[in-house]
Length: 531
Image 1 (tube, one colour):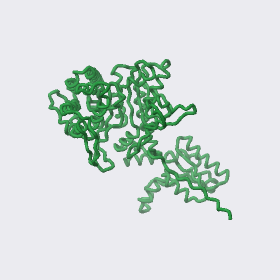
Image 2: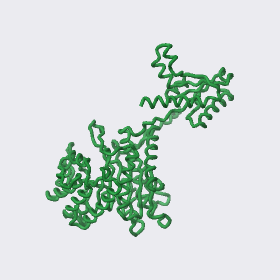
Image 3: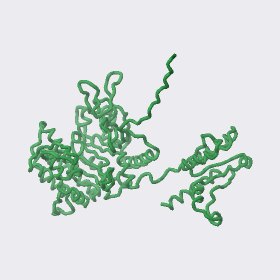
């Protein structure tokens, strides 16, 4: 007896870890947000450019190991010519490649923006995805810090264009040369101390998360967290730790230089102090006392001073932008000014705790990135907005997705003959040509109840109905589905019915579009009144 043929195994539908499907509401929210960001960039004179999702792996700064695939941090594959290619890790490295490859054709300074997905081959977790969108702006070929200052001002304008009011955000500004000066001053200069410098910078970057006591532990012997996990520290002595903590608190200078220094060991007090108006010149002066003894530190202080003067001249010294020595970005990436857009309102995290929302984007000067391809210095500066994270913030503020998209008008199908179908299709096209969203029912038309259930699930505002009797008279029935729902819940007697807006009317075919538009406008007024 022959074996029964095995049924083919059903394929299991499963989403790859670290990736998400996006529904209509999120897609529309992103489109709404990126349109506002794009308008600001265009106003500043930036033009769009687009680079591919894949780049050669070495162009991204991820170099192949001696064997195996280069899968640390990036998703990679081999081309048919055995060259390694990777999905882009960010939008900046592809821009550097584009500039270098087209250096003789582009106009310097090259001012450009681009939005797109980037990919990280990292372990996914809550709020941490392997694919996410960034929106960048960059200026290549401008060496002066006025280009960096302009980036900070554009970041501030972008936050406000998105409806984030002043006081709910701040653009924090620092300089890698200042950070390098501090590290040199405590004996961590030179190539042989590169690893130690990174450990110290990572510790400073944890100030808002752990407070100064936690940072002091990371700068010293190390820190044990609540779970008992131990992070080895930088091993600095007490004086060096004091100098670093004194440095990161130097930006908290208020309107007068004689204001007492804030207690940097209290992160909440430090944040409240930073929330107040900052005297930028006094902040820069205080930083200079700490780092001026080193050449790098003195250069960084001078650049911060120039940027502070530009912010003041342009009217951005009102709390929107602040000098903050604790701002640490791109530990092995940036060469001068660094800046970060931070939202300062509180949200509830997955543990039910109230926390400050934090960073939604940042950038800085990266003079070495384009130079890798050119063999000559090419100055560049720019910033990147994390679109997905910013979208979450805007939803928390109620600044995104408030204008609900109206569902399509549904043209129902009462008869399936060719002539009737042609009429229904003509009604649908007439509405579309008038700029009204519309669809003709495409399911099993023989069960009219299913069509109304479909309209209800779609939240259709209006249904168009024409049976044989209406067709003979040259009219259509227009059913206001939104008003019908309201009437069914509110009308209690005949008097109320007579006073209410009629939920269904009969009009000549020629008046279909005008009557539908009238009903949609009335529904829009109702939504506006409801707030």
